[in-house]
Image (tube, rainbow, N blue to C red; front, side, top):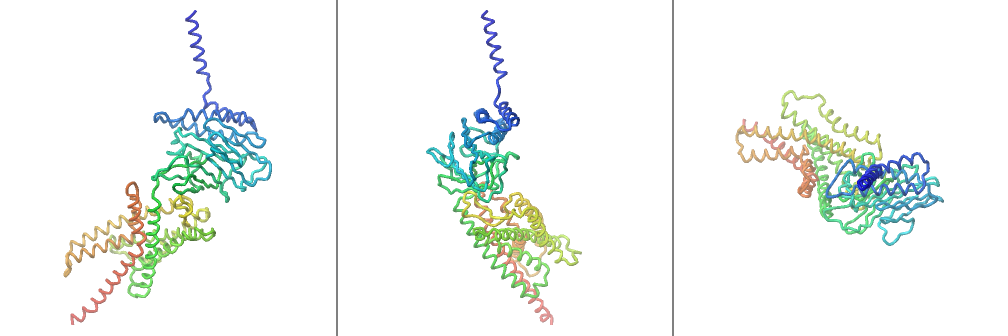
Length: 537
């Protein structure tokens, strides 16, 4: 009899364990029942919220354990809960909370002119703040929410959860703030949504917070459309975004301290101003000297000079234009800056091609209408790229905040879309840099081979000075110093950026010096040619 009792208890225990519903299965049932029932009741939404909370409880990190497949359940659960909350029937306002989650549903009963929501870990209210409130949301009237739309606010606070599968290595306080409107896909707002969070934990000097949203399609965070309004030592951070979804504050490594950023900005402005002045003098000297104008190589150099003039001319006032309210002027400035930068890269590459003809092919290098063809490539290809960008999406150009943690003070007019920026500038430069590095190697090899030939009346020191000047000049013309940005990482980040800014902002000035040396060389050769006949006579 005792044996039968133990057997029955074991059978009941196993049956209970087998038939027990897992949270992942329950949330799946939530989604299915939500699709079957057009407007589920609040009790169903409460049940689903509890199940999502249970999933977060299960997915908390324990002793470094990490299972990517299992942790993805939280992403599916949050997306499912969003759909359930949007379809939930409410009269006007409803509060739903469970553990890590708190949700507020609101259906406007009168014309919508905006809404304020205040929330803590377990409580949320409309238009009224309360003692332990840590998050406040300002929704603009531009949402144009009607009586048949439900505004959904859902906040998740789970610092113990492993957020790496969400693409966030360090999500501040494990907090996500979700915003959505039933029946609407809200994007491209002119009046931004502002989410202000109280910073209850200190932020290290080596870190800075950035506002980002979670993209459920690619399952990763992105900062597109979001601005981070925060300065160090402030107790609050505001995320200003032009769309609705789930938002969070990510702690990332601070690339530059504010002091270094100001110094680098000042160095760049001084260097570019000096270069602009020197480049204009270079063009005037070129125009006034007939013998220089006849030199094909110098005519190639002068095109690079003009491209750099355009680049500096549009870069220097870009920050001032971005601070103004005129969006049309900023778009023009961004477009012109993009074009002049691409033109600079193109003429750097053509400098490399010209060196290839002079040093590699040497013979049979005559090209019919050579300068015209170079000009079509140097000025035409950048025009084609910029035109395609404008045709596809004019909104690609606009104000870009250089430092997301200090958006009020560092903005220029440039490319807003990161993908376009990477492909049309970084991608193009990588190709140009790789080609020109090869051409620099060819130049070095030729200089070494020339040194083996002893020239009459010239000492080794004179030849060394000439060779060094030649290599430095070619390095500047090919834009090799731009490649220093590839070495600005890790411990080299700050020193590398200082060297990068100094050398590249002064590129125009260095070209001016190269031009003066060329003028001196030309004058000496003319003087020698005039003296030679009198000597022979």
